[in-house]
Length: 99
Image 1 (tube, one colour):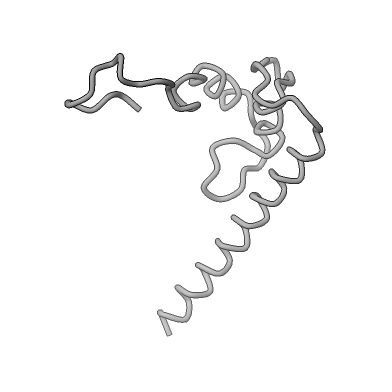
Image 2 (spheres, one colour; image 1 turned 120 degrees about the vertical axis):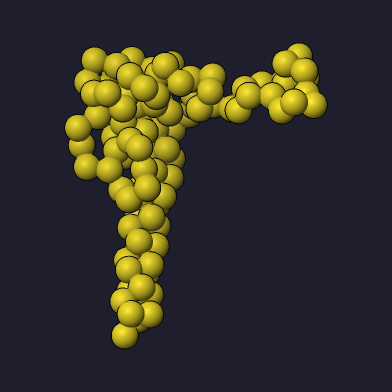
C-alpha cells in the first residue's frame, strides 16, 4: 500500500506482502491454471507454493514460512472450504431474497 499524503515513505516500516512480493505473486498467477475458490486469485496449490517457497509451474517464490508443511496445508484447506461455504450461503440468501 503506498504511503498516504500525510506519511513520508520513510514512515513505512514494512510493505504489505502483496506489495513486497508482487513479482512472485504475478509469476504464480501467470502459470496457475488450476481451479481457484471464489474470490481467490490463486489456486490452493499455488498459495501453498507461495507460502512454502516451492516451485510451481516454473515459478519459484521465496519461502515465507519455515515449519511443518502440514500446518500450511490445513490452513489453506480451511480457508478454501470456508470461502466455498460462504459462497453457497450467499447464493442461498440471494435466492431467498428473490422469492
